[in-house]
Length: 142
Image (cartoon, rainbow, N blue to C red):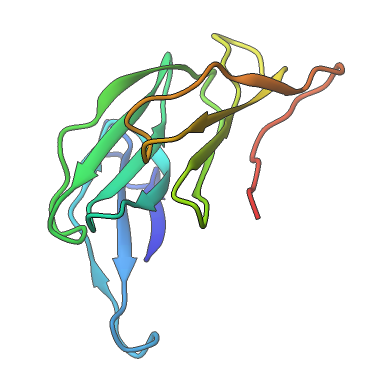
């Protein structure tokens, strides 16, 4: 699955979706649309459901799919602040999830990381990864 956003067609609201392939890229299908956020980061949970976090101000939004991305729940605000900056999320081999983001109202400093031990259902207190002056955005987790 490839996460995408459409900000160019003047829909009046940002919307995000995924392209998915079952044949190594020979054909692609579009998932359901999530309205109200952009630039999704997503994980697959152990039960096969998908969780997407979306860039939005003033809070990161969350949306879930229980049908492999065909449909998504209405995006709802999470506990995490967001200054309209990109986010990154990854499920680790042990099932834990990490989230890298700017937990701020308006600034892209500091850059934070949070850990979930239950597949992003609850989160521990975020730690500051970078606090030096500057803008930290568009993080990637590898």
